[in-house]
Image (cartoon, rainbow, N blue to C red; front, side, top):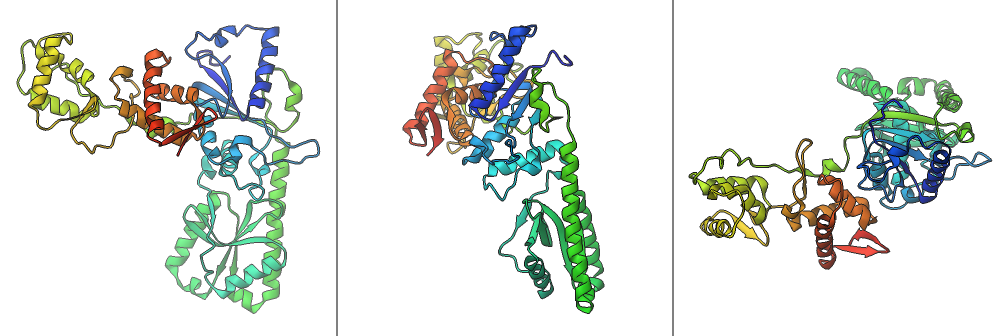
Length: 475
């Protein structure tokens, strides 16, 4: 083992795939269980095998992402990706690939070009195609987002004429195709796939006289070529002088682009990367690859603000009452709002010359707070502005988690709502584990579960969230 200190998990697409992988692991363990320690449920981060529906809230250092979809015995590929094909499936994919703290290992028997976007409209399938492409070819294709603007008008009659000729010859061609903000005149697709194989630019007479235009288009072409585009440029003057010759050159260029694309596919199909998969060598007879990529940092945590703490330790170290209590409490609430009364008491107990919150301290605190004009109490927490937008906050990288009893219910309610909105059809166990993980808790005790249950019920009673067959959805 290269990195025995790292935790490990496997994410599959469906329950059946999860059970198949788990069964192979159990068979291996029956023969040789030398890695039993990593399966111990008492560990904080034991090995797991889960699917897209159940992995929310779990994180491991390394995630093996198993894409167990492949062509059938006659070479046909069915574009049925289970939960990925449903509405919100792209969010399930996002959850799966962001479970890794350090890196993702992708295992698949297909490549990006096997997913034909003409055969599926699901956003989840499109993003899976992009993810496979990124894993195989690196980051250079990340921004290769294609848009065909149906409302855009062609630049000239010349462009329309070239478009009509290509359509008459039976090619799939689109006008005004965009890529990362750059537009090209015509994009020719592969006859049997959704991929673009050639960009065609139709340049008129004004192109020759515009230095700025030439420089701009040259730069644009360089950018798009780095993203994998192949360009063919037609000059209007040449076209109108000798149309038949230029037409033949155009069609030859299209056919060559198709041939080059097909040749690349054949080379890719011959490329195999050997992987270890529980000594089941028959699984490796299909084209498989495993790719390790940098840890994905843009996960759920990026959706939440970091909890900022106001340091009062130095202020209350001295005995006696320091002056400026109102200023201190104002700064504290302004920094940490919404903040519960109990946490405020804990943080300011030193002002009252005590180390614990006694009844005397509580009474003195209440007396001081009643005379404070700039702090507002709402239910069980304090704010400076009654209209403050309240969202759940999470601990920083090196911060300790807040005690669940000191987190306002309104904050937890906001976090739960956001996770349900993000997860689309998440069950209660996955929901609570996700929230607990975000808040820095490694285990869910009764206090945490009860607080989360209370906040979830608030959302259900407010009619903002609905429960259907054990899963939660935004209304």
